[in-house]
Length: 367
Ligand code: ADP
Image (tube, rainbow, N blue to C red; front, side, top):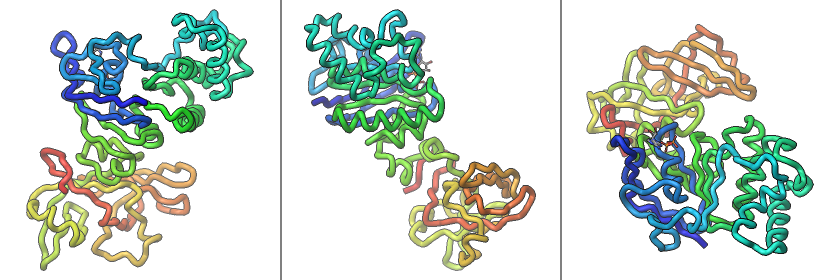
């Protein structure tokens, strides 16, 4: 059982470097929370403060209601898995797993029981007598996770644990971590810069930028209802399109207009864009919400623009088409059956029910 409460926490390094600013997160028992954001946004610093590896400059951290700001790392009942596994090269896998327990003077029978149990959970029982250098990257990472498991901590912390693995192994380990979470039913806090990892692993995701939390939400809400342009752009691959234009009224209707673009705004969005009539606005739309008209023939002209293909990137099952329309660029995900060629004009249909609008200055989503 472990809740972690982070209350208005800031970290200021010497030289007035504000790494984390006024961060508050309420993590409930058994939750898998992912901190995600670009490099330098303060994710690791936040995690390290929870672990007790970094002091807290301002604010409070509670584990199960107990204030831990002054509690040393070793007494927090937390286990952390790092990106570089830091295994002892001269020790066997068994001894690597047992090391922390022996240090804490666990009886040999208990050490043996826990090491074997962790090895079984991770599927490395037949590797216990090997040295780290005789293991694959994935197996080493499993041993690193195993060292955390044997301690049966209240909270697991992961700092980019999969970054050193190749793409295929990363996907496999991602699934294994999910299974591990289901099996151990433990509270887990996970740091990554990879939004796909965040979406696939997190019950809830905390998006950070410049030391500040932008949004905390479950993966679907984050994807469907980003609070600002940063979150909309960071979550999703390829990234969301952001088109600059103006809201223009015509005969009781509103249109999003710019050079080469004229799109009718649905009635359901009128209220929110109304304050921007005749003004600049940013319209966000995901690459999968724009269609080649060839495959959406019934679509109205009101939701269609014509743009030229600049580049086509075949991705196997689909193709990413890159367009320009006036000053705006656009990425569209189409099926691999699409025959659009570079330099060809293509009619593109926008699913206007999926668009988001952002204030051009504050970049905040207009709700
Ligand atoms: P992330 O994990 O999101 O990549 P970090 O938490 O490691 O980001 O770092 C956040 C900010 O704090 C960065 O600007 C980084 O340069 C700075 N920083 C991290 N550690 C230190 C330190 N020990 N001293 C000074 N600045 C640091």
